[in-house]
Image (cartoon, rainbow, N blue to C red; front, side):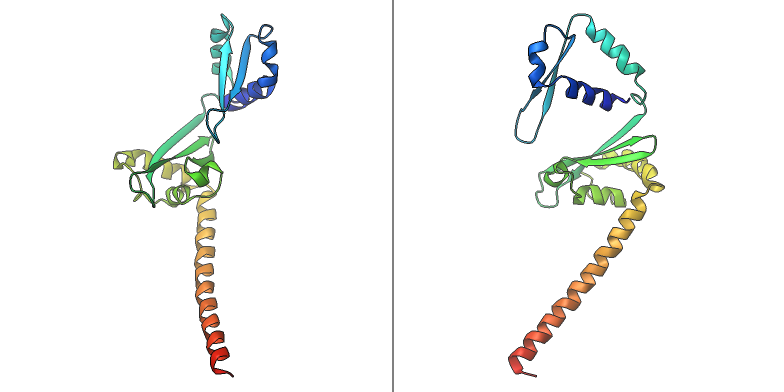
Length: 180
């Protein structure tokens, strides 16, 4: 069980309904809605449990094999806005998250797509080029490259189809106006 699994188990085991058991439990987790769309867990530890928790977390398999890269990305629509795209690599399995509106909904966003494609032009700070290069090494042999390539091909086909459809509509309108 990795660090995230451990914390998720804590969150599942002790939710707001179990706060009444606070005196019986060494660890109390209270779920707090801080603002719309965000969920924060407050951990309260009984005396002496902090060290036990730290020891347990350090022994958790996977607690130290997670690598993360977070890159600040410029918004395409607002010049003063940046978003953070985080790539997590656990033994070669890579997941991607973005804190933009679409990313928060776990949708594919331009920011995740651009970085996965290898586009560094939208980096908010070019001081992050070393991290960007390290990310590209992670992605070099990942299934993301094929998925992105297939996506780009499908997008090009769809764009060409839209052009043909537009031309056909103009021809139909013209025929309807003039008669055939």
